[in-house]
Image 1 (cartoon, rainbow, N blue to C red):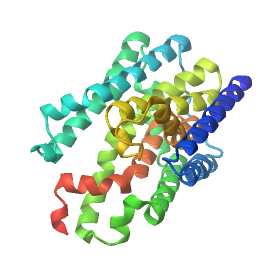
Image 2 (cartoon, rainbow, N blue to C red):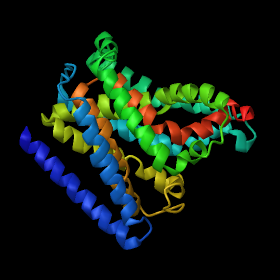
Image 3 (cartoon, helix red, strand yellow):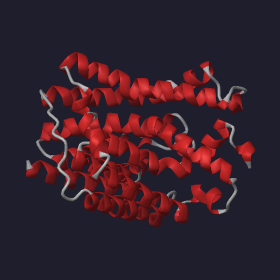
Image 4 (cartoon, rainbow, N blue to C red):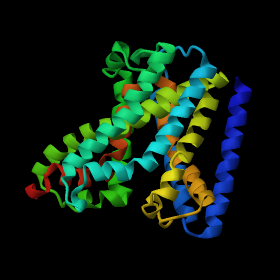
Length: 318
């Protein structure tokens, strides 16, 4: 329903405005930085995603019992948030990383396995058991593979390349690449390996749970793709709050080790929620999980490649 989409958009806009005012009052997050994220990710790349999918007919997906399925999807997302906060130290204790005397690649593989179980395997099994859903109901089918050979594949290349080029020229995480710190051999081997790893670690895990599971069921619940998009984006941001407050993730975001819950929520709404629009638009325009997985991997490539190069043992090629 059109009214549901309008209400969801207004609620999101209000939450974003309040979040921006709160962060600006604290002075901990520069206003220009937050607005740049809105302009570049929220509008710029989201608009590009809309343009490159003009004329694309989304795959037909059916959500039976939308109320029940949406409730289950929400509960699974909450459980994943609890898992991310409570299981990190447990996982590190079993297979420690290099800083704790362990092996970096083995630790990364262990974390990847746990993420695939928590974000993909268990949610799929739950929906399969309760509602009889198949992979095709989540946007993975023969048709989704074939479409990558034409329009959906064009969208992956255009959006993925645009994001990588922007990050290369403007992103601080891409400084090692701009400065030519890596040998050609490292790039030739490392970049394809890093991309393949990110397809599983961030692409498949997050896109399956938040777009194919959560957004699709919210759209069916509200009978509005627009409502599904805005509610998903809001929840996607808020799901990061426990990690920022309880697990010290706020340090990486410039919020300190233990920010208060309101500040953490304001930050996630103004940053993570805005970033979710790109993938949410690609999803509702195509319903092709493979497409959004590949674009998400490309989005995280340059910022995660240096750490993955070290885990793969490729820095010795320098």
